[in-house]
Amino acid sequence: MGCKITGWGKALPQLTVTNNDLAAIVDTTDEWIVERTGIRQRHVATTETTTDLASEAGRRALEQAGLTPEDIDLLICMTITPDAIIPSQACLVKARLGLANAVAFDLNAACSGCIYGIDVASSMMAASMGGIGGCQRNPIKNALVIGVDCLSRIVDWTDRATCVLFGDGAGAAVISWDEEEPGILATYLRNVDDSQLYLACDAVYDLSTLPFPQSGTPTPVAVIAGTQPAEGGEESYRPFISMQGQKVFKFAATVMAEAVETVCQRAGVPVEEAACIVPHQANERIIRFASKKMGVPMERFQVSIEEVGNTSASSVLMALADAFEAQRIRPGDKVILVGFGAGLTYGALMFQA
Ligand code: UT7
View 1: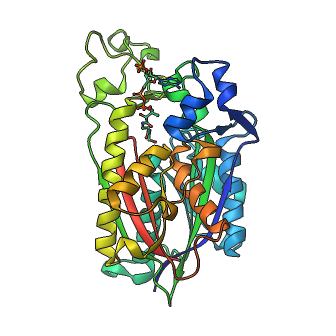
View 2: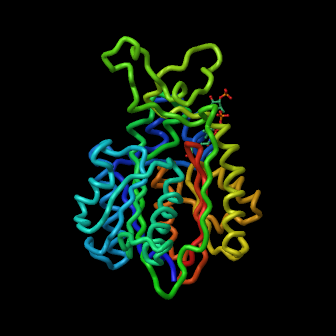
View 3: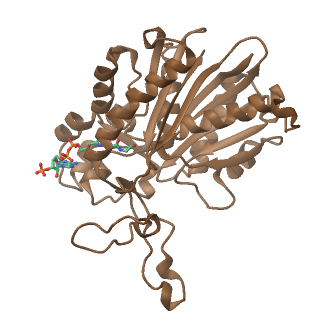
């Protein structure tokens, strides 16, 4: 018995923005972006909301799983760009899709959202179906997890170092309790303090708008986190994503290998037996680096970054949908998902299809 992935889906905004489109607004070139990242275009939500994209991906995953909205007992939306703070993104999607019986909440683990979301949903499912600890809980037979982000809202479109990387989209998966087959075999979640703020965005926390004199200065995440101001200046409010690209690159390349190795050990399955590895799509070069470090050929990695860029919490679930659609994953196959992102968060999981 176990928690099986039975449905998948993705949704993208209509508008595509090519590298050449970006070269018209910042000092960059198609060659630079392709060579350094593998990205050729991304989708940007100009008419769609986060709710629109999440709901469409969720609807497709339900259809794929052959379930009705009423069958869903739990909805988790993994996002850093919800349409509102309250109601949560999950509550908005629950209403849109008519998931009458679902409890719904959001989870922010940035680009690791897919791994954290599936782990939380499957843990809740296993605890409720297996009756762990003799505690009576909501029975969860079917869960829907949706990774969704409209990063275009928090990207500085004048900063060539970040605006060329990100895109908007949503990916979804249905997880169902199966009395016969195993499903998710092992998970591994980790957090490392981002004390140097490699990846940060203050966005909603501009306390300078408070009408009290003591609170008159902006309170950036650096102050809250207790990190030192950047050399030569005070920390200032970051309305947009700020990133130390090379630092994140090194972190990612190291932890991806560690996470995959650990999850393989926990599952008792050597990495060679994994039919497909679906990584966070941040940079094709990071995936190549990790592939070398793990000694696993690139052909076994799902690479979907070219057309969509880095879509944060949506990334792994969208790439997973691509891998299923391309029939790279067949019944019984072992599949590894691996992610990393702001927090810093990272993790991996292995499931049997
Ligand atoms: O979801 C998780 C979050 N993000 C990531 O995982 C991203 C991890 N990091 C990366 O993917 C890479 O570090 C980047 C793609 C962001 C940057 O690639 P890089 O090879 O590390 O480039 P760099 O930052 O070392 O910059 C090299 C040069 C610099 O010019 P100088 O100082 O050598 O003259 C940059 O100013 O490239 C310049 N540059 C650009 N040039 C053209 C930076 N961005 C651009 C650009 N177009 N868009």
